[in-house]
Amino acid sequence: MSFHVNILTLFPEMFPGALGHSLSGKALDKAAWSYNAVNIRNFGDGVHKSVDDTPYGGGAGMVMRPDVIEKALLSIKKPGRKIYLSPRGKPLTQKDVQALAATPEITLLCGRYEGVDQRILDAHGFEEISVGDYVLSGGEPAALILMDACIRLLPGVMGNAQTPDEESFADGLLEYPHYTRPAHWESADGTAHDVPEILQSGDHAKIREWRRKQAEEITRLRRPDLLDK
Image (cartoon, rainbow, N blue to C red; front, side):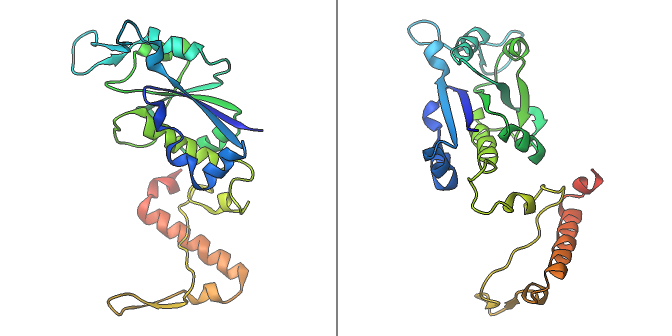
């Protein structure tokens, strides 16, 4: 199954961006995933291809028009699951990412200015998803984040099939710390830093137990809300 993403945007040149490199770029070349960046401005009004107007009720900024966005949306034959990237949306979780990665086709709406007219969201059943409690200059960076999180879960994209199961959030915990060679290392200030002996023991049962305890402790200190869940 191939994963296809339609992107409604005023800046189609922002895609695939970083996703055209490394593992996601190789997966794109192999057609494990594909994308279609639709330029909303192509459906704008008048000589200047207007896509926005002043908000009813007053206020700063401009709002993207529902009629223009709808024309762009209807140009997509199979939009699939429709998502509007918005700071007021439901926070994106790893569980959401897993579900999205298993969806053959999704459409991401990238807002600009003060956002989009609410009526386009209501009329076409857009879900609202947030990638964090902060505000970006537009939906495109958020779309890239969501796409990256999904693409890396597609079959064959990551070399080690076990990797997704051991990462942060996979089992509700943050990930345990990692170490590699050299076993003994001194930082620039002369301080010695050694790899924990348990990781060099070869006792896989004890290593799993140690990693679990480390994950629980890190989660307790940094994200106690995850433990509450």
